[in-house]
Image 1 (cartoon, helix red, strand yellow):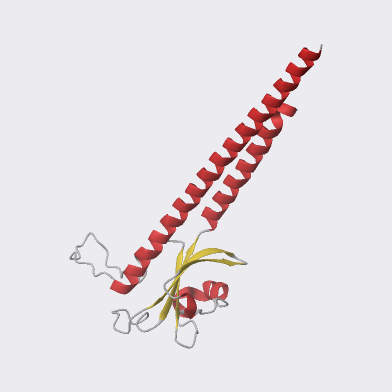
Image 2 (cartoon, rainbow, N blue to C red):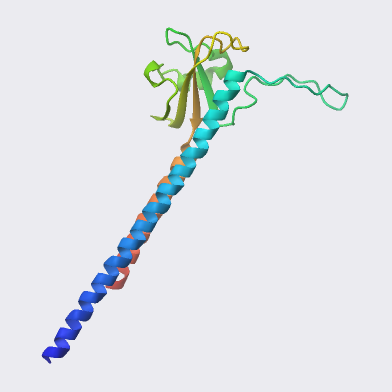
Length: 188
């Protein structure tokens, strides 16, 4: 009887050790995948910000193709290189938004409380507001820039990352639920 009892105790100890090892490995794998996913998302967003920075510095691109009767004559929007979820705020040196007209009343109301912080010049940051989450980049555009709207002003590029943040939060929740289920499953 004593040897049977000792074997059962040893089996239980080995089972718990294997269970904890599996849970630890699963947790570690989940954390690694989450960190890699997060880095990938922010790398893509930061590349988009870099592209937008270069587009602002280079100025608007001129359309080299001649107009033909099949192509209607339309003026290119100033922000043609900007992604749809991107907004630019142009500040004067006093910190006031100068592109209120191009933002529209709705967007201006939404962004008017974002103050100019010159200490974050050329730094990518995540800005959380009560209306959303943005990845931002503040630039000081040269006075010689071909676009008079930006020339000599501070430009804050805001890239909405609400969808990416929701996806990361969902992934984190699924990871936690999965770890809890697999951690508790043998005990149920």
